[in-house]
Image (tube, rainbow, N blue to C red; front, side):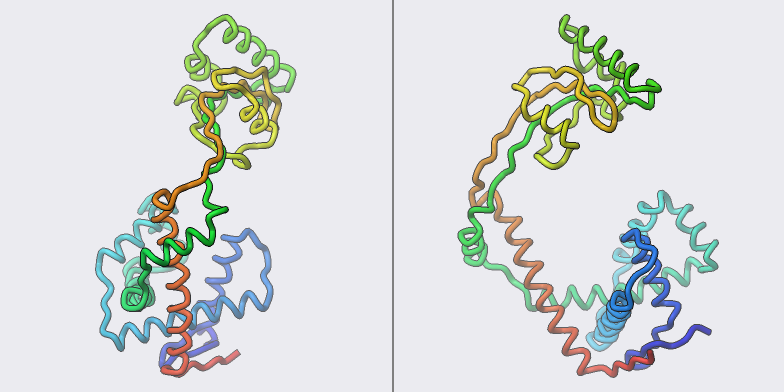
Length: 286
């Protein structure tokens, strides 16, 4: 039996439960090892979850079947299908029905959070307006371009020289008036070929530096000479250019509302956790 490392009322937290969370944390953050402080923080996360579950019982809060279904669907999506996920559980020796019941219990923590936030968090239009005025200098739409490209991958052509040779051949066809989208569909080694090479809109910092520099420096409608990046050679066509501009309050009202709502919610939940630590018995055994 796994060691008991903490208790919240009568609910026992085992070393195995912490180990599972530690392993998930390592995987998510691509770490081989984590610090003792990180482990303590993860244990505290489990304790907080149990506190919220206990409070859900006291408040008589229920988890709707739709919440369980939505959470399961997220697992299915992440693991590329329901059958893949169930097979993974099976390999780990976990019964699906037991997993579903545990999930329903764990979701009580979220139900408590939702209940507390709904009761105590509100964002007014005045607060939104004040936030906008205080942060007006940051309220800008970034400069962006809309571009298409044709990629000639060095891997596909076995060498940089062959990729460049093909890129120059296609550039000549474009100079002769051939259709960019058709040539992209026929010759590009990027998945965007299905869209005629369309990459949509992107701002600075979204593409590798040499590609970005070339795309931003082109005139609208201009087609570049072959541009070398780590992916190979690109021919880029600039479709549109949107300069940086100041955003009006109406443009960012919803975004500000969410920012303030999230900030207030975090304060409310932190306060609730502290109250629950006084209300329920918490015991650490490690």
